[in-house]
Amino acid sequence: MELVIALGVLLIAVVIYEYRFRKPDQIVVYETPEGVGVRRARLYPRHFSLPISKGSHSYAQTIDASARGNLEIRLSLAVTVAAAPGHLATLVKTGGWTGNAVARAAKELETHLLAHTKEYTERHEIEELTSDGIREHLQLRLKDVGQTLGLEIVSLTITSFDTVNPQIAEAMRQREHARILEQTENSNQQARVAAAKARLRADEAIARLEHEVELQRYDLKHKQLEKESKLAETRVSNELLLKRKLLEFEKEEMRLLKDSPELLLLTPQAARLAEASQSLKNARTVVSLSPGEQSQGNELMGMFQTFVQGAINAYKKRKQS
Image (cartoon, rainbow, N blue to C red; front, top):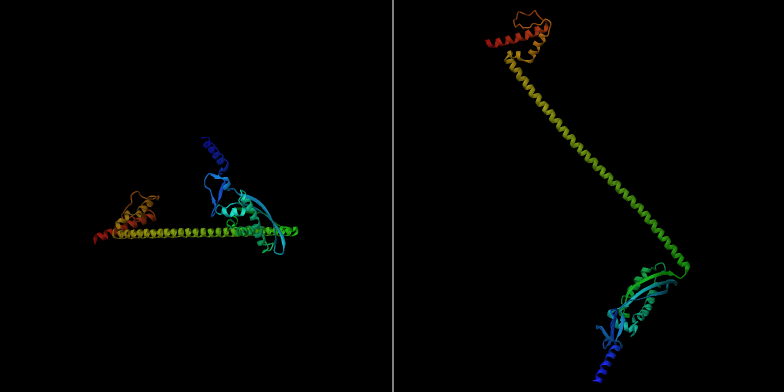
C-alpha cells in the first residue's frame, strides 16, 4: 500500500514538474516524423514541446546603401513580424528550437532587407529614389517570407530616408523646396483659372436666363397684344352691328312715316317744335291747325304749322285714294 502511495506521489510530482498549461498567446509545437506538429490541448509536456509566442516582434533597422553613381544613402526601417501559423516548421528551422525563434528569425530578415534594399537603390538614380518606392519593392520581394523564414510581416515602414553627403542632401532639399513652391504656384494659377471659368460660366448662365426672361416677356406681350387686337376687333364688329341695326331701325321708321305721315305728330321732332313755339313771347296757348293762320308768330311757328299741314294733307290724300 505504501508503495502504491509512493508511486502515486511520484507520478503527481512528475506531472507537476513536466506538464505546463498552454497560455492563450502561445503556439505549442512538437516534433513529428513528418516535421513539426501543433498541440491543441491545454496541457503539454515541456521537455517534448516548444511554446512559441503568437505576439508580434518589432525592431528598427538602419541600412546604409548607395544609389547609382556610388552616392551613399541611409534609411531607417521599422519592422514588425510574427510567427506564420502555416509555416511553423520553417520558423523552427530558421530560428531554432527555442522560445525566441521569432526574434532569431527576424535577424535573418534583416539580412534579406539589406540585400533587397541595396538591390533596388543601386539600380536607380538618387533623384528617383523615394520612400514609397523602396517600401513597395521590399514588400514585393518579401511576399514569400513565410515560406523562406516562417515569418509574417505585420508592418514595414521607412521612418527616414536621406543621403549621407550633406551637400547632396541640401541640394535635394532645395530641389524639393522648389518643387513644392512650383506645385503651389501651379495650384494657385489653376485655382485662378478655375475661378475665372466659374465666373464665365456664371455670366453665361445669367445671360442665358436673362435672354429667356426677355423671350418670355416678349411672348407675354405678344399674347397680350393679340388679345387686345381681338378685343378691339370684337368691339368694332359690335359697334358696326349696332350701327347697322340702328340704320335698319331708322329705315323702318322712315318707311313707317312715309306710309303714315300722321305719325309725324308723334315724333320727338314735332314735340320739340311745339315746345319751342310755346316758349316764344307771342306764342299762343292753343296751336291752331287752320291753314289761314299764316301771319302770327314767328318763323319757328310757321315751320311747325307747315310741318303739321303737310302731315294732314298727306293723310287726306292717302284716305281719298
